[in-house]
Length: 394
Ligand SMILES: *Cc1c(COP(=O)(O)O)cnc(C)c1O
Image 1: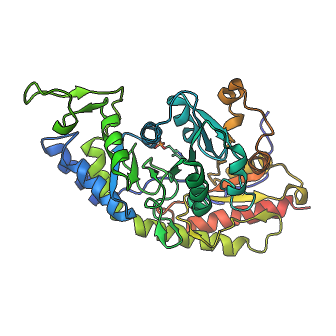
Image 2 (image 1 turned 90 degrees about the vertical axis):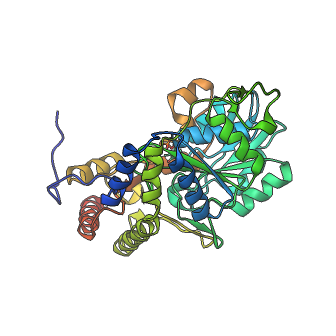
Image 3 (image 1 turned 180 degrees about the horizontal axis):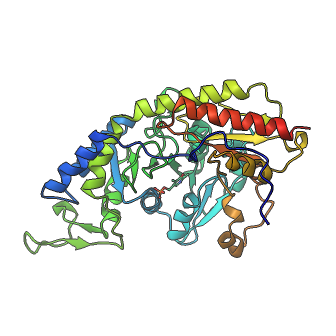
């Protein structure tokens, strides 16, 4: 039975929660590669890596076929193997934890701070055992995790910090760009992220040893570098020295990425502007909580999440979500806590281990936010949210 339609759409077309912004420059950049000699492993890849490293202020960058592959590479470079434990947040996309399992390790979920929604540094230490090798904080929604606290714990316990900054290209933490702070930082170039290469990801690092391992891991574990070879049979000679993967990014993607990166500051600026409009419009609505921003960081705003005060509302999160959809507003939920996914439940992770994340999940809705949306789109979202909350408030 179809539910009663209470709300008329606020607009004709459905507004997605996020999408890419491709212009003529981007298209030209891709065409240039297609007309050239190398579609992959050519000159555009190194250019893109250099451009990203420069943008974030890191020494090195290694691009991958997607962000998940990049995280896998980082876990390999960090030396994570069978039986090792890695601490991460449950309030993230599954890839932040899956990458540990790819290496035979065990993700340990540590709860979020109820204000920032990022991993709570005060709860990390109690999760550390003699098997712990790394921490994977996530800059959730684009707000940098509390990196100083996390890096301090990591130093004390000799752990590697792999920052999942899939949401945080262009974000700043204590005056430094995200990507230059942790041992390794991952960015994703999926179309909903800040810039896109279709599929793509990258690790930035200041550590030469990680850099070398990442390069080799990305291409089957193969090297041709003379000083690394055990033997040398001739100019054709290469060695596969460990089991790597084919995780390479094509030059087509890299050229698109280089063109997109030129626009990242404009993209982030527009995201910040739309967020300011949302914050201003919602500030007096007592039934919702708008995103809290820690003074140490400047978010690059991948996501804008409202949290419902369900005790002040007559409807459930689901009803409010569906009411917004009815009005042609592309809402979403980020994320179902990773440990509640059936795969993780089968592995034995219990409901209740991260109460803050589990409670947030019940109350959150992601509103549309992307640079290619217009101010009119933002006003449509505001209108629909206000109308819906007004209708359902107690
Ligand atoms: C998008 C995303 C990833 C994975 O990136 P892909 O490029 O889609 O593989 C990892 N972690 C988080 C938090 C993400 O949002």
